[in-house]
Image (tube, rainbow, N blue to C red; front, side):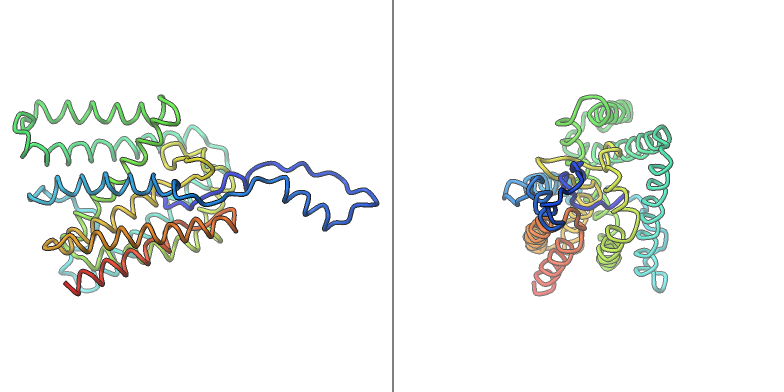
Length: 315
């Protein structure tokens, strides 16, 4: 998955450049250009997609929490291996860095068919996996879907509907599908990593937040955003004047999942982490008012982990 940044559409607006007359100074032209741009202003409503994604992730957690659903290995190094937490965190960052670089190269070469093929493959595999895992978990509550002849067709149906929402049904269904899959996928990661090793999840999130800063300002993520993040359907969503990457939603939900499954005896660390993520998101949006592009992970991850871990260890 790509970890994207909050992105102001206005940065990509074409500004009409004209030659200055003898009476117009360079500073006057700059002021004129600035006035011609619409400026992003933070409103509390911008938090709604983030909150919706995390709430859906919480619903997924309630499905997984009371039972032992078979875990899917998402980290290559077993927790009993010395240094496993650090190696797994580096593995995640390297994997995401390679993915972002590949997409940037393909965008630069205008390989739209290859890009779409990779996105379709990745999202289809994610939808199949998530549909199967959560349907299997729901079968405890709904015994009539416990049979393979029911689960497998339902998994295919949900995957087809998800793909139609992303690639056929338009912006609103696409945005809704991205928000929901962000919450579900993040909780899936939180369940499969934090329930085995809380510190693996923490280090992965910290490393990703650090990488996000580099990737936005010096690496491929910022270049992708400048090229037009809307060229990657399904890997981002639009809301009013902003675009946010799917990766941000995934890792916010993963953080919440890490608190739920890392501290299974109390729900307060998860609540604290959600408060931290929302506070960090507000800070990120205010920074976005000053900059056309800003990394979406550092503030929410830092505050979410700080509050979540503090409450978890105090309790």
